[in-house]
Length: 491
Ligand SMILES: *Cc1c(COP(=O)(O)O)cnc(C)c1O
Image 1 (spheres, helix red, strand yellow):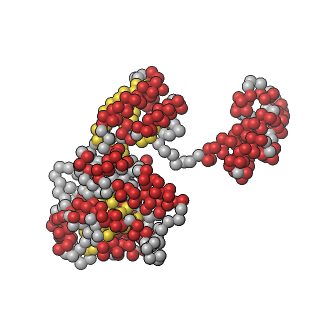
Image 2: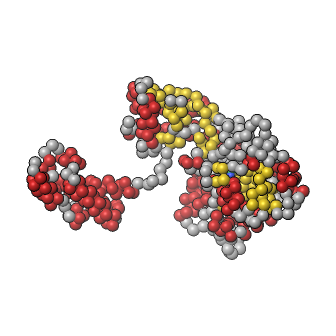
């Protein structure tokens, strides 16, 4: 075709592109308006018209031609352009309305996965959140006196009851708890910390950085692997505000090691009339060993051992919403609550509403392993996951075809969120391997991506030439929808 003919044809096509008003008056578009409102629909129609014009100018109107058949010219009627624009606008609107925040299947084997939102809330907590969010509530209103209240009052008695502490306060997360504690108690003063405990948690939280932000001077003592009581003793001077201990959360030092336990550290601090704070990180309220889980220091045990302040997360082993709990001596908590940063770091009503029912579950430890979602997942016996693997394996094998082999295999889950990094929980899951020897690595990566593209993405992990799907966190009630998704798998 000559250049002149091409450009004539292009002009003719562009002339058939409908006007915005024409599209807006179409019946199908009116229906879209009822759902999305006129403002959004006009915008989506304009976007779709622009895209169509752009394609026509570029002479590649594949969509329009393909939707009509082989004979391009006849199909490119004004009507087919209109239908094309409506379909496109509708899909633009649908995409825009879709949430970016989506539930996934966490089959990574890490129960408290920081990138996947850590603890899952029990139903009681979810109901309480809905209740308080859809109606006014006594967030800062004392119903007994009719006077203004303090949001901490809603929950501090319960926290004290469960931890044995004199007083408590709650902030946005544990990083905030540590920052606030140091700001309130050690600004322009020294804080003594062992070099073996200067941890970094998840990149953005480093004890030395938090210390600097709080305006406190870090007094490092000991060595990476060994710190002794006399190291603390020697570091104490008139500028010392606090001795601090930090849970090593995400790493373990083994071999020739020595650290000073909290009870001994408390004795040293108290001899010098100094407080000692312990950042427990995960901080469990109950002895996990009773369910066969690895032992972690409990908050109560730490308070009993003499810690004056303990900070810990709400959404790690505690199993609640994101929050940072600070418990300890009344005078210290009072000082912390008076600091201006407290106002900036305070929790919202969502958090308080969710936290209270979770804490209440701890009053009935007999039922905790059934009712607290996190603990239920952590204590699931391997035989449970083995049975689940048997139920879901055939459907996945069927969906994947001969290129992949799906087998039921034992694996190990992790608690996650820095709790007990070296301990692993026996579990079962599916291991998917590529049957053709060549390019197995690529096929696994493809599969991993295809699982991520599902309506509710399935997240596993690739290790030892297999994609591993640990079934610990696939609850029985979710199995049907899990399997149903294979129909949408695009490999
Ligand atoms: C996890 C952790 C933190 C940070 O807690 P967030 O609730 O994530 O802010 C701080 N210190 C220790 C020891 C931790 O394990």
